[in-house]
Image 1: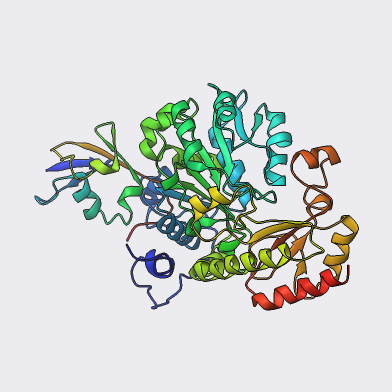
Image 2: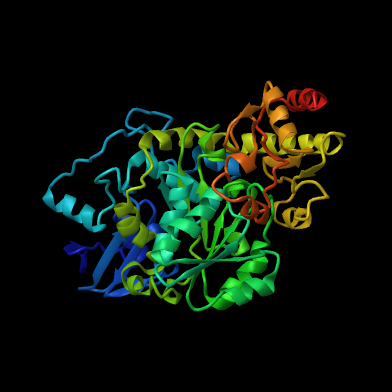
Length: 70
Length: 410
């Protein structure tokens, strides 16, 4: 499955099902401090586990702290 | 969850340092290098979590922000150059021309000056109310109110506002509740659990570790729906729940330039490690010193929220438990006696600050509030007979002996 993350096409492995999985795969240190847009809709942090990804989805991660990448 | 002190020491650790350093290094660098042009573009767009320029973010400052976030339970934290910068950045984010702030008339002197003088000239009105009069607060709020602004303990009047009760009113009006929690810190008072939306700290005080450095903190507790804010609503689509902190980080704070120096952040990272120990000592000593002063024949009156005679004692007990902060005030016969006592002290220093490791004394009438008329000072609860004592962490008996020898000279 391919998605677009912050303007770049990313190929996801089969175990990346949800937004929470994607945040983990991207090594985001503080996932609750990232603003996530999924197909132009803001997703609240408490929905990261529930929202599942599909082929050709468009995601935007917006960071508020300068650092945080492992 | 681990205890406060353990979290202060270990909580915000982000893996092993390349050299095994147990302390977050002081990154005294203005700029940060990036792998390639795409990486730096994405960092500027906020689409990659990387530092670019220390006016916007810095690794040492970031560690302070993450530790405060962990200790407070807030959603997002921004460190700035001073407590006043924290207040001004917050108001610039929430307010604007034609808006108003509802607040107590017992504000810290510089905050009052910011509201009544600096911001007034930009068209922002300040409405003063009694914070123990819920009806008055309710009536003062209207559709142009950008926030209700409180201090957990006012300085130096030492009035304690009932945050939970006031938050019920702000929630009814869909107005954010902003609290300056400097004198209590998240160690003594959890603002998030008491209905506060935005918490402000002057980290210059307890957090700096002993009057080492100037700094400020803004905490978004994540409790306010920014769709309800006329000014911030247009930004919700981009930032979602992070709208307040997003607009701050990516616009107001960046453009105003009131960034915290990495050196100050390093000192405050160290200060946080001993915060609970110092606060415990300062509060315990404050209560003993207050009781001593209260029993002394030369002292006309003592004001400390820990004393049962304080009008705020019951509210303070409900909100803070058994610790009531490190500041007290007391009154002598006249200004001359106040000056005489100050000049006769050997351990307590004559200086303006609070929550230093050293005990400090000041005559607010002639110093902090000097820009106001006598009438205005009386209105603000400032008297020429009043001294403010900020109790440090010296041995309590030595503080009492120092005050006693000074009082005996009067």
